[in-house]
Length: 283
Image 1 (cartoon, rainbow, N blue to C red):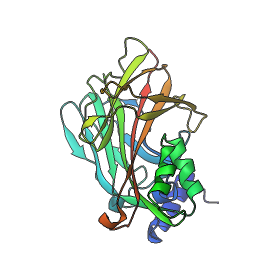
Image 2: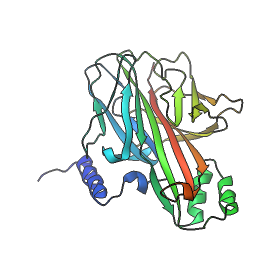
Image 3: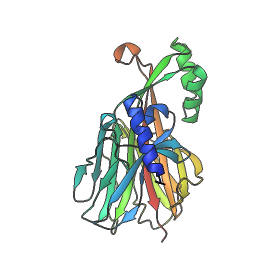
Image 4: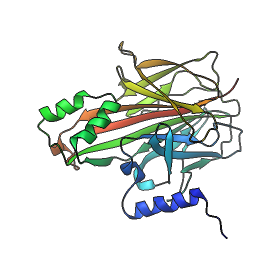
């Protein structure tokens, strides 16, 4: 009897959704989006395989390469940069073969997508979780409908992968919302790792930041969750105490009011999701 792999089944399911005009990201709005490396450390000339995932608590459904949903998907190394080249349905979505050592930065930006809220309670659960409880009162103050209203959203994901010695530094890539590691997680002298958040090119102060951590190579094992807030002194920085042998997902969401008369989707809210994933190896 022929054996059918889970990855094959998921690829077929994703393709069927594409044919129906539905994307996994639309179905999973309100969930985190991140880049997952098969190997966070590898050698030159080994394939770097990168999955796009959406889910909760660092457990997610893998997405296919879907060019119509991608605004930008590329990698940056200390010596070069290039876009990922894929075909509709590829899974994992990103595969490349690095030729030089160093810290590789992976970037993925989605095209705008939208979600329609059936109830205000649904919207409230989302905004409270992501640090915007005042949005419900503002929704009412703006005299917006309690059902049938729309939000547009985009995802801005980064990942750090060590090739060979993994030397180098993360850097700002000019994303609308972006999380940047100020220290190389593969070469830490202690357990402190500084992160800086930017929004529209400016330090993002007062941002609610959710940190997910799970044991390295544990698959979809249970994740620990913590919540931080960037400093209020205008630098947009947080310092994490991290542990070797763990993979980390850092997540933050920016929510803004928008005028439905000024966008083609007639949306009343806009959200932009930033994420950063990396591993901390054992010493």
